[in-house]
Image 1 (cartoon, helix red, strand yellow):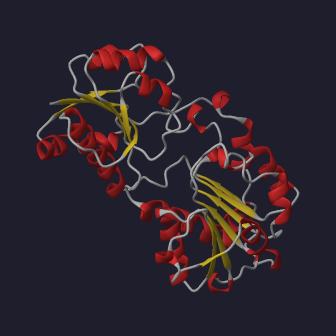
Image 2: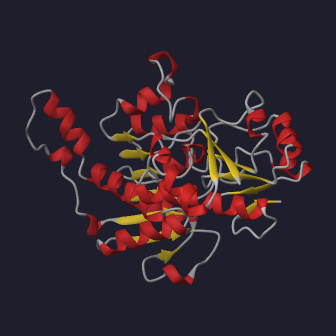
Length: 330
């Protein structure tokens, strides 16, 4: 069995030989994202594994996958918003994803950014770059056990964040539309507005849906504490970027840790010229009280291995007419 792997990263390439041996298949590596221009390269394949950066909305791609006898589109990521489900259904292509590859990886990044910002390290470093090695009262911080953490979304990742902060002695409040009694030892469920108003650190861990797009904007920032730290390691479009920049500039919030930004696919995961970097990224990255990382919270050895293996397992199963574990569209 041959499976096409589009846009493999350097770290994924290092796993190919061991993965082929483990699953008894051949992996065909195609450097570019799947598109109408290269879809014919899968004519000899039984399945495809994707990590799309932009929307896959060209009907010819779906039609040709079906014409070549491919039964599914395997996503090596959690997010499915890049796939046109209507076209997938039209051409009888199942869509699978990897809903859990390492919640701990993203949780650790969220906590790392929160701790960095809480101790105002970026602001100290900015002062030191100017020869100021003092400890001004404006940069005094509070220890984490004195903080209230507010989680929006308590799925696999949010739960892991709650456990870490709880173990550090922090009070954890959380809002989610789904109640999970298993996480109650680590947090207290409350409503959305209470999280906004009472949390010292707010961390987003909710999927991007029509109902969650720009869930944090000008109104929500105004409700938060002026010294709140915002962490977003979920999806960039959950936050109104212009409103976030304005809130930071007006000191309506204290700091932000961002592993994801709206419209990031035009430059994240790529090497680009300065002219291709958006102005909002430049403005945020220049602030010493902001951390921006290029959607790298997932990037651990455990995650990369699981993203390949879990997506491949389902793709092989569907190619054989067997049951897959993580089908999001059929």
